[in-house]
Image 1 (cartoon, rainbow over the protein chains, first blue to last red):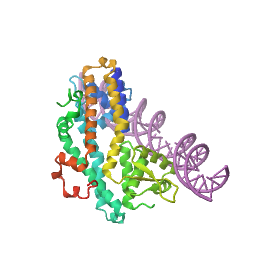
Image 2: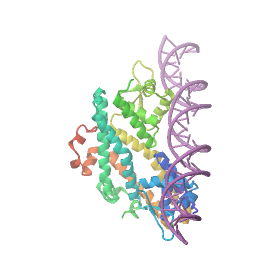
Image 3: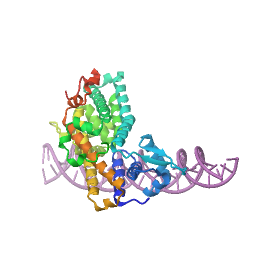
Image 4: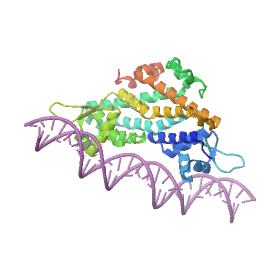
Length: 178
Length: 178
DNA sequence: CGAATATTTCTGTAAAAACAGAAATTAATG
DNA sequence: CATTAATTTCTGTTTTTACAGAAATATTCG
């Protein structure tokens, strides 16, 4: 598939963004491609469109699937796997936040809890102890927030925060989960 | 300065977390050290405590200063620079979000706006055009949310979201910005 | 102003991550 | 059940990032 100029630049930018947030560039690019394509694509087509090795696509798709961002579908009369992603930005965002939480936040909470129940903690300065406790508490508050927020539709959340009035008309028309 | 076991593990874990989020490990470690220390430290002491080169500290401190996470202070009778960070997790979080926004989100918004005002956009599939518009809109909503939220104290936000009742007593006692 | 101390920048090396291509495995079809 | 197609895993290379140590610069003090 031949990429049109804007799509290509979108995908490249997305890959760049991924790098800055600890996401493999190719993984981010593939996701952006599937997102813009809005239809299932097979591995070879993804590879040739992005100019990366077939094996690289395989690995990256596996990664995207582990985030539940990509699912495999089959087209009739074609034995190859085809891959697609959601076109709902809010849904995608929720999946990414959920994945990050499971992989990074929850383990950190476990580590910090481990510190607090470790006898060695007493050897630390009082201030340091306090800050470790506050860090854990803060992360727990954050995750509770995010749980609450992700349960809502964006519009509801905006109303709760009283943002609605401040947003221009442009922001609202064509909202993806209306 | 000799690190006590829990502090050392906290700092190492923080460095690890940083890596996963696109932050240089040493940068994250230095910030964690200053956070736990809760007092200004000079570069040589930071270097020896963490076991990294003096030059590495210099570069990393510069990075942390560009995020406004670390400031330079001077102690009387000592001509060396000393560095300290806030011990308020909420304040630190706000600075990090603000920095990420300026460095990554705002430029992305600019890129997407550029696409929407580019005549080449017409050459793209209708669906792709729509998704580019929705992506921009979503990011703008997100930044508006975050602006609103960061203006509040965490307790206020929790009340707004109706979370308070669900949180155990533990979560609330000793909150850092009470 | 010159010596001493502190700090930053530069440069080459080392470590880590990403990746292509080959080889191996798995699945589908006749 | 053998052949072909599709996919995954493995291995070596390339690219990128992180970093130490040296050199250069800046600052402070007598």
